[in-house]
Length: 202
Picture 1: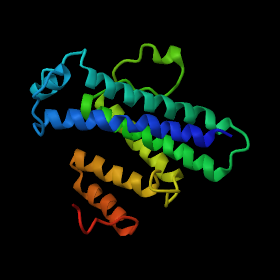
Picture 2 (picture 1 turned 90 degrees about the vertical axis):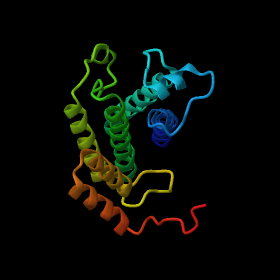
Picture 3 (picture 1 turned 30 degrees about the vertical axis):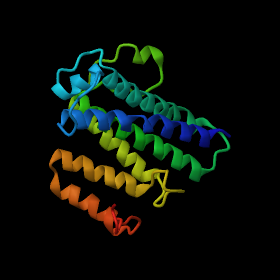
Picture 4 (picture 1 turned 135 degrees about the vertical axis):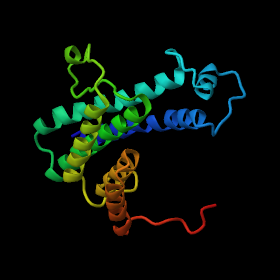
């Protein structure tokens, strides 16, 4: 079966979200100052962002590539015969988690965005912009589905497990200003003893 390869493909799509997020975040937060010839970086630095901005297009594309592959897995994997239950749960949980996290980045970058939850071309052709509340509810639902299916300990450090989802929940509730839930989820991660801070950060 190619189930494992499809899961890796989902992670591969998801990893492309990080560079654009860091670049856009650092420029718009004044942590970087543009001193070159790339107009897309200058636009981010001045917060005068055009619809043709390449950095924005790269982030948007990475978000929806991740969403599409996650939707493909969620639609097709339940009907694939011969997949061990443990593997099926892990891959389904990964799809829910990474789709939710992709929408988290989308929500706090663009606000309400199109809520794409299928791979059907006709359905996706003209999806209107969803409200921020609708996207937030999708994120929470996806994270909860991921919590129910991902293993407590991932197969290796490159894969998500239960406590990666709990950490994502903690960050989400920090953004929402729900301090009690942020403390709850972050404490669960700390108390898991799966992670530790580097003694020598340098």
